[in-house]
Image (cartoon, rainbow, N blue to C red):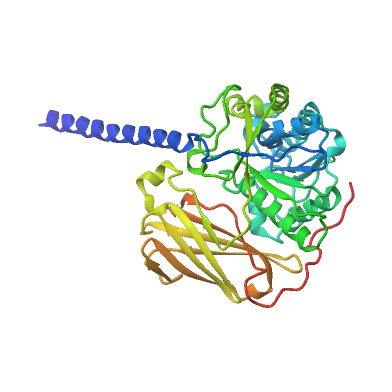
Length: 464
């Protein structure tokens, strides 16, 4: 009898192991599929690189400037088009890289050394691309902490890696600025005022890395504030470059004879194609290798961006309705009720009416996490967050098919000058899908015009 129980146990283990194995295979295949590239419905050529253009590259970390825009920078320098590069962080929160230059268990000093090293790597990389020291701006905010700063608003954030709460690198002209969202925006405003860019290139708000999403938010807010003050001679064109999105770009590795195409779920229009000359491609490769701490750990991934072209998606004018990529996560093939299709917002003087459409009706155990960041006329940042659970009365909602209609009470909404919304679906606390940062146009919301913008709070002035 015991022998039969033993055989039955082995059979159950075999069945369970097969189920787990097949599930893992399907997940890997799904990840691969959603990261596949496809040709956009139509190519949009980048506007010609003429000498009257002024390009500003805003990167979350050292190496992002080369991954997304290395070829663009090389081509612009060749045509004598002015270029400036801004890094929001020093890349000082990467444990793997800190272990390369420090100890197996890095401490705060190792991370600080990493930050200084990555700044020097970025300098060397940009010299290879043809830029001078005067073209480079290091801001030194916390790596892996930009989204935390965005949500914290006026409150000072401490880096869990370096222990810093203020900009402390000697290479940064904004030394001692606190780790707050208004400080980042103020630093960017100063650069916009001084450089007067015609084109701005920054991280994509749908990038998987939270720092990249926050970089897009800080860029959008600095442009909005500067334009509203009338400090720019013309409104700059805004473009996004993508770095992290599943396994994209595929195939990974060194394929300089291939095109760089957008991910499958994001390949529907709006992409600008910049062909690169052989010289620009080789300079981009050399610049990536100059980021030695990153190249040693991620050679295959970094080399995937050395292609025949670079891609940029043009930023849309803020609207009240946003479409979201669908079927862009392998888990969403199994649980399509967590797949966000669209978000529509209607600002009111005391809150927001929000409609969230998913591919199938949202149901338990899924939850919605909604984050709203607002900025008032004095530059104060405030964050409100709501969690919706199907069937809960804490945040009531009505349903119309696959669409949930929610009311988010914001008593001070009338006094806000800017709003940014992020919607996430979560399953057992794990993020399944999210929107990018959705700017909410408040200037046409229908209530009295807010007072004119003033200098953001907690933003000490500085000169380079």
